[in-house]
Image (tube, rainbow, N blue to C red; front, top):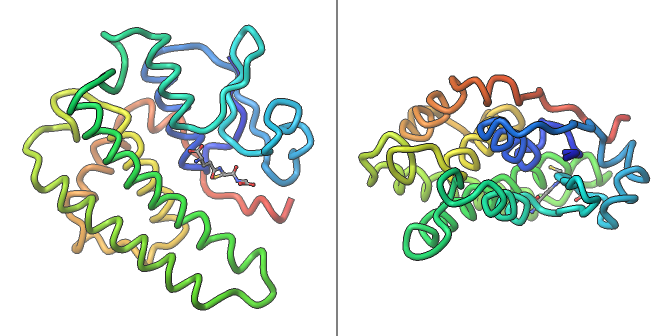
Amino acid sequence: MILIGQYDSPFVRRVGIALSEWGLPFEHRRWSVWGDADKIATYNPLRRVPTLVLDDGTALLDSGAILDALDEMVGPTRALLAREGAARRDGLRVMALATGTADKAVSLLYEPLHHDHPSERWIARCKLQITDGLRALEADRAARPTDWWLGSALSHADVAVACMLRFLREAHPELFDEARYPRLAAHAARCEARTSFRQIAQPIVNQLAR
Ligand SMILES: N[C@@H](CCC(=O)N[C@@H](CS)C(=O)NCC(=O)O)C(=O)O
């Protein structure tokens, strides 16, 4: 398998961490969505990452779809999300909150880089969406007594939240006050202590500068 994209992306990182947790071998191509867009386009017409190329040449797109396919490939005992029922819906909701917050954090980072006159309205909206996403996740985590978000074992929900938090804290430190989000801070610390999280990590690179 070939994983395309850099680990400063919270979406690429969540796929890399899952592959590492499973011990699945893969080649990592650290292609930039800007500088290497043409190379990415040979696998993904959208020129987006993550893109995961399977051994038969099939390219899987979008972190959620990639992880869903991988869960199916590793089988139900190793999958990092339940295949069906309330547990699956619960996990999907937490993941959507986390990846949606990450989407907004990425947009907020790129808005001033893409525009000579950044939109104050767009910036304010992104900040509100991020803050309310964090508040919802903090409240959700506070209501759960378990070590991990969905129970006694690590799941894709844990990884999605932790990858979003790392990106957010690096890109927009002013939006994450630990005192306001103590459960999320503790969650991030628990995840980032794991070997997979330590190995699959990269500081944010301004890819537009490449
Ligand atoms: N929903 C997608 C989001 C992926 C995403 O936003 N990737 C960014 C990098 S962090 C990207 O490819 N940006 C280039 C572009 O959208 O043109 C996923 O979960 O994979």
